[in-house]
Every structure is written in structure tokens, then in C-alpha cells.
Length: 534
Image 1 (cartoon, one colour):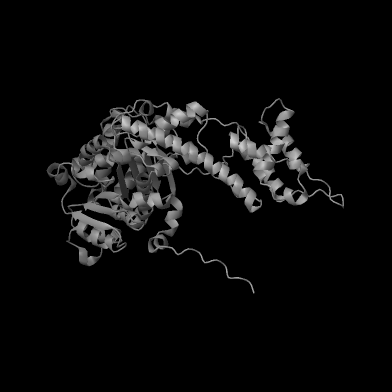
Image 2 (tube, rainbow, N blue to C red):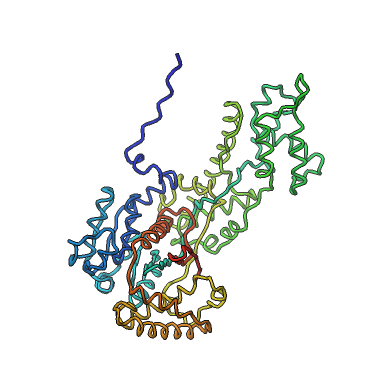
């Protein structure tokens, strides 16, 4: 009778609850999420949709700042509000509904306008990980933007009106360790193996192995053996061109010894070795984008205000200067081989990665001490993760929204030359915000004012284009369409945009994946979207 299969380890309730997202950003990413504090300004349909998509994965806490009461318009667009909520505090009702989604999350609200909070509560916004502002008027947005820029608190501004959606991310500096590239080649270092790896690889003569041993040797060993033979006949050079790599592939493909029937059978591990020729045979160099980070002024001229990221970069820089390469990742892809051979090879890579990470950790700790920083400012686990993903490091340095709004010139001509570019929505939205500031209402909010408001909005947009020295003229139907919306939100548009915005906030919180830089537009009529760096 066959023995029962081993029982898989029991998952905790938390792991079961958040299983799918833990596969995306891991336990360490989830910890960042659970320690985060989010502030939402204005519980509009879009604002609550963003918070919904942050409460469900388990942010630590949120606070809604909104002095408005629930109106009939809110009931028509906001999934969380019902008829019996009309006249009640919008911040309070939205908070109560959102807290029902996840008991792990804490929530609070302030039933005051953001202008009142900014003027009466000093440093209120400094306590948040990210601030989200929905449908915020220009006169409030500019001072808030300036304040958060100086406080180095990320700000996400968004607006949903009719079939149009907009996200603008403001972040002074954001560092990413795990950018999760779409494709990544195995890091096996066969061009310059370190001494322990070279000794192991040189000890195996693939050509003299018997049939059983041939089928069990890892593909990395096979590839190294034939790569060494190739280099003997090519002055020690690696194959670079397609033709040269085909020569190496042919050497591996022709290696089997004919069996008793005269057939040459190529084992699975040899097929893997041929596949690795395209992805694993290249000289080890430091990518230009990583070298740029290591040469960055923030990496070279450290201060007491330097973040752990830049301190680790400084320690990594010294390792790269000494070795000429980034640390070994320490992991191997799955491959056909017997267990002992694979584990032996895997341990060689793991030990080398661990040794290099320890060296970076010791140096980073020393740098931190020299700067007068606490001993625990950098942890060993952080450094191990940093070294493992050293080839993925990324830094975003954004621009201030207040500077953008106060700028007298903006180069939009190159974008507007394309008739299908969504950049014209940016111009319309800027005109819309200026209209709201001047008239304290949305254009077209009242049926009998649609046509007069079209003329007013066109005049404002023309003035903006003149300020930016842009001669382009927007088509009348585009301006008229925005006025027909009358400031209304469509829940379906807000739901899509809310999911997109929540993704960007999660990227900021977890320091994983590259965030938006810096504006995103969504046209629900054509289902098109576009990003621009303003």
C-alpha cells in the first residue's frame, strides 16, 4: 500500500486571508502595508473606491477628511452611500462602510473641510504614509502640494468627471528595491565563476560520464563544460553573436554517444543547457542604470538624513568597485538533475550570495555608525533583500504639483501634434479647475447654463494656452463634452480609476514595482489610457 502524501504546513488565518497578495509582495511587503497610514481628502465616489482597494488588502489605518454632507448626487455615484445617508456627514458614513470590509483595518474621520484642517492643525498631514486628494480645488491643492513636498509625504491627486479620469502622483524621491521586471535571466556567472564554483565545475568532466550520470548532471555544469571547450578554440572569448552561440549549441547537441541502435538521444538536462545558451552566456557588467545610482550624489555624499537605501547603496558601491560585479542573487532555476547534484550546486550559489550580503551589511552598519545613526537603522534582512535585487534598484524623483500649476510655460506642443493624444484632457482639466476656482461651481452643473459655461471654459482654456505659449486650439466638441458632464461622477469610471490609483499607492507603501511617473489619463469613451511626465 502506498504511503500517504506529506501534509502541507498549516497556513495561519492571516496567510489564508491574504494569500494571493502575499504572492505578489511577500510578507515584508504586507508588513509595510499593515504599518501604513492613509489620508483621504474628500470621500467622493473615486476617493472611496481607492480606499476600498486599500482596505481590502489590509492597510494599517485611514483617516477621511471631508466637510461635505451626503447629497443626492453622492447617492447616484457612490456605491457605499444609500438614501438614508442623505444629510449625514459624508466622511462618517464612508468611514463606517469601509470599516465593514476588513476588521483588521482602523479608520477615523474628520468632519471638516481640508482648508480648515490645514489652517488649524499644524503638521497634521506629516503623520501619513500617503495622502490622497480627490476632486480638490486648485486654491487648496497648491498649498497642500507645497506643504507635502517639503514634508516629503507622497501625494496622489485624482479626479473623475463623466467619462474622464485623471491621476497625478507627486513624490519627491521614492526608492524601489524590488521592481519585479517582466523578464529576468538566471544569474549563474559562468563567464567568471568565483573560486569555489570554478573548482566544483572543473571537477566534472561531462564527456567521460556514463549514460546514467549524464542524465543527472545539472544543465549549468554541462553548459560550463562546453563553454570552456568553446573558449579554447576562440581565444578565450565568450560567444556573442547568434552565429557564435549556434556553434556552442551544436557542440552540446552533438555530444551524445550513439546507443546500440546508432541513435543519439539528447537528455532533458542537455536540452536545458542549450536553452541556457541564449539567456546565461554574457559577460557580467553593472547595468548603466545601476551604475548611475552608485555614482549619484546621494550615494557618495551621505549625511545623517540619508535613508537606509542610500547607505546600502554606498556599501554596495564599494563591493562593486572591488569585484567589478553586483552580488550574486543566490538562486538557481529548476533544472533536471539528481537531488544531490542540484543541492550541491545550489548551496554554492547560496553561500556566495550570503557571504557578499554579509560584507555589504557589515560595511553599511559601519557607515551608519560613522554618521551617528542608531545601530538598528539597517537590518541584516534588509541588506539580504537589497543585494538579491541589486540589479532591479530604481529611484523616482518627481516634480511638485504646485510648481506645475504656477509655471508660466509648459511645453505641450509635441504632445498635441498627435490628434489622438490624451494630453488635451490635461488642458481641459486645468481649465476645469480654474473655472471651479473662479465661479465656485462645475461648468454645466445647471442645465440652463451649459452653453454660457462652454464659452467661459473656452475662454479660460485659451488664456491657459496663451500663458503656456501654445498656439494649439482645442476642438469645441471636447470642451462641450466636459461641460455636459456637469461635474457628475460615473461609478463605473471611478471604480476603474480607483483600482489603478490604489495600485500606485500600494507601490509607494511597499517600495515594490515602479510607480507612475507622474500623470495618468483614462478616456472611458474609447477605453484608452496614457501616461505623461509633466
